[in-house]
Image 1: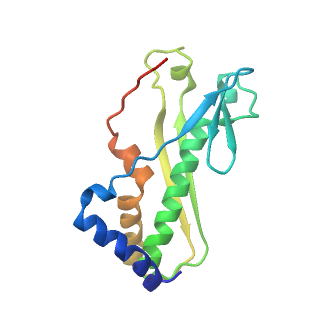
Image 2: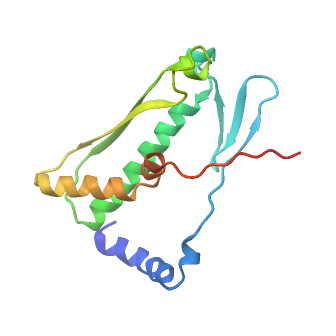
Image 3: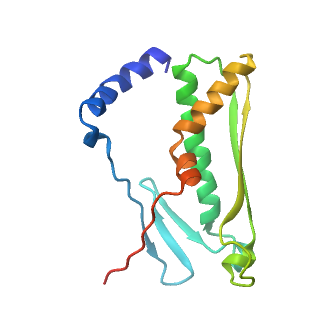
Length: 168
């Protein structure tokens, strides 16, 4: 897809959202069910069933997906798609590119071993490897716009309001 095709595809959506902001508000949903045989949650992905379980550092077998890994994978997926869309829109000459995310966890927090140990990632690093001859100013612009428009990055960065409820 080139910049013209991307802009043509998105133009009617942008116009509709400018005219009526309510049309731009979409609720995404994820659903899972607890496994009755093991400490795992079966997450419906729309394509397949992903089974998430405990990380080996917390006693898991390593056979199930780790939700921390899934968070980093979601970040990589979103950042990669956003980078590609921005590069396309900017007519940025991009060859092969890869995206990597890594994050540091202290499992003492999630296991309740040390109250001063945080539960969750202490730090997340997102790295792009770009095959391009573009000048550094254009690379900087590409990264700035990717960061700005990546939904998962911005969600992690800005901490949305969260709520928890339970029903019967």
